[in-house]
Length: 125
Image (cartoon, rainbow, N blue to C red; front, side):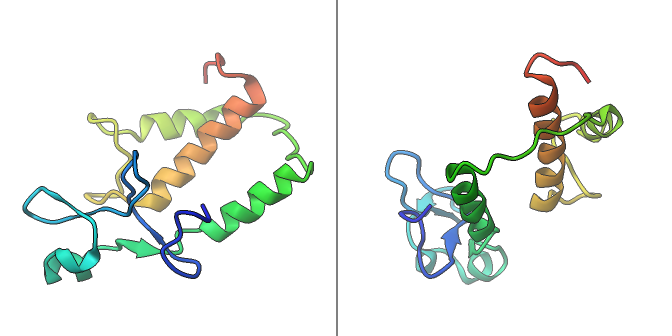
């Protein structure tokens, strides 16, 4: 995460896998490597860069790496898991109305991860 920062507490939304360079997209469908290369509409109409909760993830990583392990979930909430799975649309996306939101994805993924951590990877909801 430190190597990926593009400024103090700032990261790009997307990175190229082989190079770890920030990447940006425009209506031309090509990959661009600087925000300045894309149209003003795309530059200001989308959150290409931000904090994205990375500081909190780094703090949690440091806590876990120091040996302060998370307590496993006492019981998995199967209803929450079922609700998360049922919320997927026909294309396998979690949407809020007509919008895909990172917060919704993170919330549902956290529910699924807690369930798997508490019950093992082969557990069925």
